[in-house]
Image (cartoon, rainbow, N blue to C red; front, top):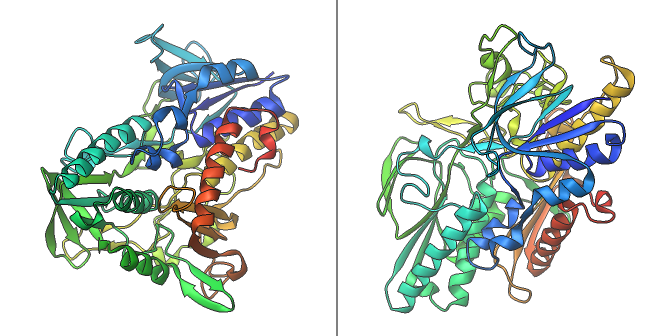
Length: 485
């Protein structure tokens, strides 16, 4: 019998756990370690952030699901990995700090045969002074943050209904942020709700982003083929901004946030201040505070993790210039090269480089969207890790394991542009592959027939349907595994 330990219960970790129980659980032990008691369907947090959903609609308790499926659950924070064991045992183990109210503050050791790191990111608000809920802006990164954002948003609407103008600054709060798509969604949901409240004429909305062009979304932009004609996500997105009268500050690194002021630097080195009454800026991500030690107790964190804190896997981390990177440099199996019984999936793995071209200002400031690794790709990686572990259990360390490179993986994204069954809208996009492959697709890096986009009411219906489908899937209801990742 093998023991499979999964760190994290987000999209990647929860998906891995459910598939592990389904395919391996009869003869093997499945353990999930997460500091959170609830699962959060994060893509719908943007609706919580404008008051269209509440936190109960985007969350559910994890423990009952795991109990029903026969998965052991530890509500705890993983602190250290000992892949070689220690002086007392040669078994690899994870040291944890329990966050469960029943055992809060207790330290424990949980051994493993296979480890899946799906911890997700640390929300690095500290990278920008004054950023975040403890500073001067709100966030939609967690359901709690989104609930607070909704309250602040409703306060702004109340002020506008009283005749007071309001300035909205929405976007990303650092030059290396990811999740530009979520900032885009929140921007247009705010616009939609202000129009619905009849106060849009008293609002000025500005989108501030590290993207060099609108429509980049951290993937270098997209080229769509529609009815025999080509267009770009840049033109498509610029049109939407003009239609909704939303301003944009592009290629920006937010240096600091003060009360009602965002201080930023642009790619060309110029600096500016964006005044705001309501600010929602997403933070940059880094790896969680997880250490690694060898059998003697020596710190080997730099061997397992990149400087960003994300775990190294089977990617090329040689540091060659961006222009020399190939699609084949991206990871395929997500196994750690030093300890191949450890996998890192979803946001937890260290990408080898940006997908969007990185740029530096004349002052040396890096302004480069980090690669998105959430949603559909995270679920695919989580399932892959489970299937690979199954092969390793069955056939030993030389077993052939599967591949799911983001350079050979498609993704679909439905970005809400306003909630409502009759008046809602969403931007629906597909791309293949996520990481451009200019050898296979010399012109655009992606397949023209598999990369397209459109915006409209039908997209909103799809996004709402996906919300309920994936909550159903995450609750492991009847036939859950038939719903694609």
